[in-house]
Image: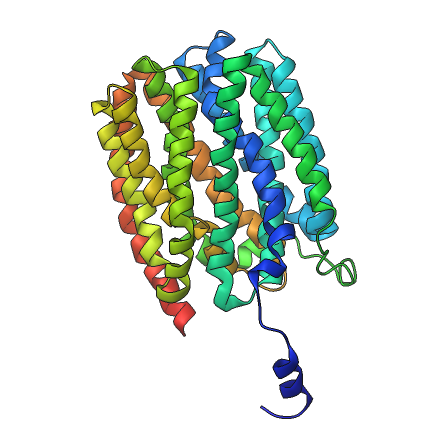
Length: 402
């Protein structure tokens, strides 16, 4: 390399994570505090309002269903208005949804608020992912995406701790008010981030979502299915763990503390997971995510107290933390330059199908059989899914090396 290009490359400062830390990860931590506080008690809030076990599981599933419905429109929205405006808008809307969840005394209204929160969460995550693709060089991509997943896990650690204290001092609805406040703060923080691509936005026609997904259907039908499997396995602890904890007689505050301890384990593993992906490929962390959730589901029917339920949760948390950012990293690896946001909407749809599908399946099985049956069914499916995930992530690693 010679001439002006070489001089520009030599003069360019080295990439440093601390230069983008606040705009990249600050809103994620804050927003995740609210979501982390709500997730352990969402099924319990539905039960408090009179829902049975299967209905409570369905209310939790509505969070994923909202994400599912929003995935493709979210890609088109981010492509048109950019990451910064998208983050600000959905932060405000999520605050409204959480306030509605706190005020309602209806299971139906709670479910609608939860579903709308899922819509905003999808746009939020997609905008964060797009920002990092622009801001971070490829050699640091997995660590950046793992850091994004880790920043959300930090929020999920802090959220249940605060939520447990609020429940102890007051009632379950206080947790939803906390989530509303955190969404407002994240919207304000997002206003300070750079708006990459603003000068080019609108200068060229936008490709339709359908055309972009059709052009990349082969990837979506192979690696996209692997994402479905990963997301379905990850959804299990959000639905199964609180319901099983109630089944064995644990209190809401104890369940929140178990989730907080699991979040600490998640955080401990997210940076090693990113380093492994950048240096050894995506396979080495994608497979443990699904395999540890399969093992955890198989062990859960044997758990009878806080110690053993917590132990099962730690098994799942280790694999989940190691795979922090794996879905976003694979999406960034395979996303085209033109139509990127639309493609990521389809990629996100794969994850939402898995997340909502896993939760719905738990509810269906729990309605027809004992809760332990749901654990066994999901453990078996996750074990089979591990094979698919391993095969196609190995293929992706070969493509990346070339």
